[in-house]
Length: 173
Image (cartoon, rainbow, N blue to C red; front, side, top):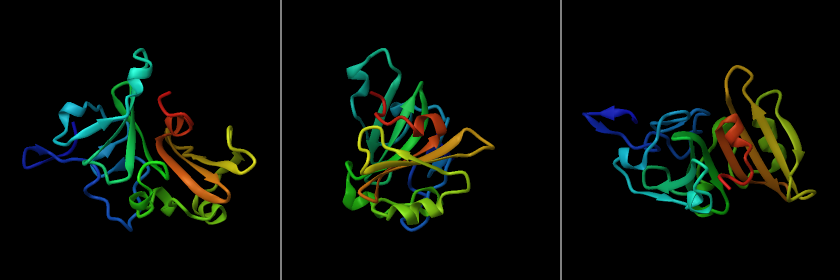
């Protein structure tokens, strides 16, 4: 269950400011690894329908008014697995946010890579090379990580949270 204020659940995403970077393990009161059911939050959630494609996979993408506009999250096996900012969702809103370490959508690749902690790695994008690239960092002291996807030298997508989930290029599919 999310954080409680005055006995009522506090929706995720409300605590983070537009200019403040999100933490690697949370957005507002939503924490990576926390049990999640759309019915438990006092918010309207929209599921992307991933389970309709494969009902045997316990994974779903959610957007909703409890997350900052332009952001989504992945829920796997009943727990929050990652947060996402992509140019495909709501770019006018999503570019306003700073992901962990201050990286943001539309940022120049070199600037974003310089903000990632030591040990970050660059690799060709599986589908978009040579124009696309992955910039990935895994926290050696935890199970958390972040992946940026770049295209034509600009950050096009940011995934963070569980390191394994952050590297799933096709989401729940």
